[in-house]
Length: 519
Image 1 (cartoon, one colour):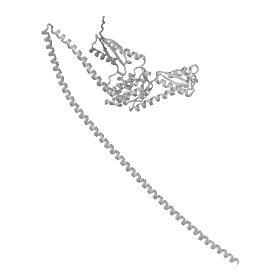
Image 2 (cartoon, helix red, strand yellow; image 1 turned 90 degrees about the vertical axis):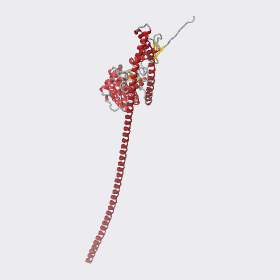
Image 3 (cartoon, one colour; image 1 turned 120 degrees about the vertical axis):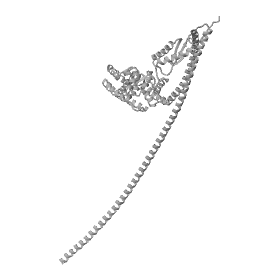
Image 4 (cartoon, one colour; image 1 turned 60 degrees about the vertical axis):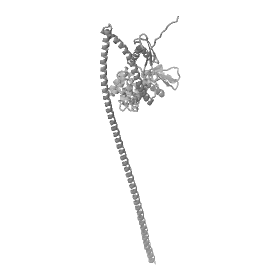
């Protein structure tokens, strides 16, 4: 019985083991199949992903190929167009050269014709002179034969008569050619100047001798003055500027003829007011800081001006001096503004006269460069500017313009002539400059003195602010012909001995009065 039970248990165990085996195997097989299936799915997905990436890469390569082809076509088109433009440019230059050559040939022909005509005219003149001498000798012989006069006396009578005729002819010729030359020159000059000035519109800046500084309150005045006036004395000593403090509320005045020093003093005072710590050591510290900033500012200003005018390379020291001209004035006109205006006008005038526009602008900008050193070195700004231009190897045209714009040297180029004209335009226009009374009176007195030194002049008056001089001559000593010559002599002497802007009109008046009384 027990044996049967044991066998039953054994049988059950064997059966359960077999079942467990089969169940376990079933589970393992199903898992293995599931893993294989999942692996296949993943492989398919990887394969599809790789195929998608391949297709994307293929598309990108295609796009890159299209872009490169397009870029190649554009570059090819661009180079082809540049090549065509170069060919057209060369053809146009060749055509222009051929035209110039043909023009030169025509001019040579014309010059040859004129030369032949001049030679023929000279021969004719020589023949006429010879005939004139013969006729003169015949006339002298006739006079001496038919009168009791000797040959020398007859000759003197004839020469006196001839001299009077030649004097009349001389006056007529002077009037005619002077009028013709003036009209033609005035038309051409007015056209060029009007065209240049119409194309340039510059701002005008007048300089004053003071700067007004606003204060937050009147207490700040006491702090600026300091104990026993220490602060204000230190400020004036370091900056070289007069600090004027009066009863005007919340206001201090800085006064100095030197714009550069006054600008540094103004910046120093503004920073001190903003900082609030006003004492001698602090004043000196702020002043040194403002001075170094000013040096950098004037260099930047000069570089900007040179860049705006398109002048190319220029020595750094010259740029610094150009920037320094901003703090220099002549007759109330800012030197830098005047130089920039002259540069623009010079370039425009030179371009109209077939000159070098860029070189004219350079000469116009540097024509007054010596003014930036006159406060420091003294002397004539023309000489200082000439030395600077020589030192920094400037173009000979620039040097000539510096010397010629005040008559120290003859004008040697179109560009220098344009600078002289532009300088006169900039300085002579109404309101551009302010003259002190002494300079004005001296110029007027010199004008009248030149006129009164001429023979036969009774009175002379400078009118129209020194732009015109009216000369009254003695009618019993000067005739109409001589009045023309006197006017010309006065104008020439004014040009040689006086410096002025614009032009001065010379009017010579000859008047005859007859007075009688009825008794």
